[in-house]
Image 1: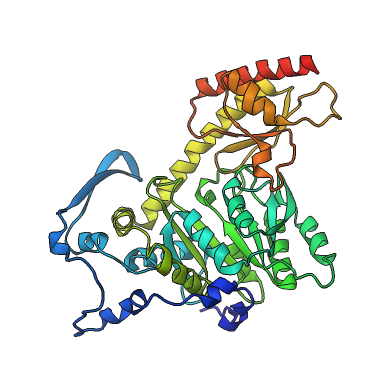
Image 2 (image 1 turned 90 degrees about the vertical axis):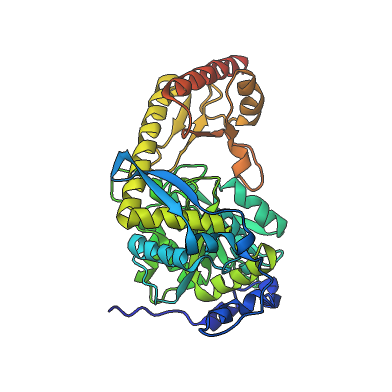
Length: 439
């Protein structure tokens, strides 16, 4: 048995937002656990009588991860169906929550008795939003990698945060830049409480952070007292040649104590985007505060979606789950290779990029002028001229907090066929050549 030092619960008083400190438990939902005592007759909750629910069973088929040519039937009936149709625990169906805890143990070597807990949400965006509102106060300064996932920008903007951008490159966040920022922080100005990062296959850049940089970020978190928000929907979509680097959640086991990483996982990219299945893992005090938020906002993640997920992962087991995710990663690697081949064919002389090792995006710079010293702006070209030419992508400006000009473009390679990719980039080349002629 290893010994892991955990930060005490009172350590997080500094990190909880004013709203989180003022939030009170739901007067009904907070008492749900009392119903579990044997012999108790509960008159507590206004749960509808499940005898009147018109569903008798749910059945579906899934490919066997170990032999995809074989279909495996899965049914949800009886007590499991009853749980899926009724109100449930705020942190998720207990068996599914426990299965996810086991997944974190296997994927990140985090034992369940080491001071962390887990909560299930309606996709990782749901738990990410709740975590930020649990930690960040209106007007706080936050550290963010840049370019940044566009979906998180509105959360920080709604809280009127000052967003300090830490640049990224092909090896992830520039941890040395982060060190410079923090060591030269203005005297008297409160330091940021959080650093937000997407460390694998980042949206939009596709980068995967090098392990040495992750270690330095963790060291800086220890030295300058901030939490790391590890938003990681592409963890299982890693297809690099080297062994997948360990997560922040795992690496913090190397630190003097654990408890500075709040991790967000998503099943959207590996099971179904529409199911909205995600979960957060982190210090119990933070997760408990997030659950208080859930209890007053949407009560819980969908019980039925959880029941479907539980039936699937229990049928597969961890061995089958990991076989499935390896197949998913292999699929996206083939998509990545086809896209890069097309990039080289059509934009090899008109663009610059680094090859992504995870995820589903290419982030490439358009050389919009014959003059290599002239930095272009992709916004009008992508939004107007390329669209008129039959190509739709995202200009890089939408991934920058201040919306400044950039020559970069984000292109997703997840859906298009090889033929569609080649045609799209051929069309973009035509637009680019016309743009350069007009310079």
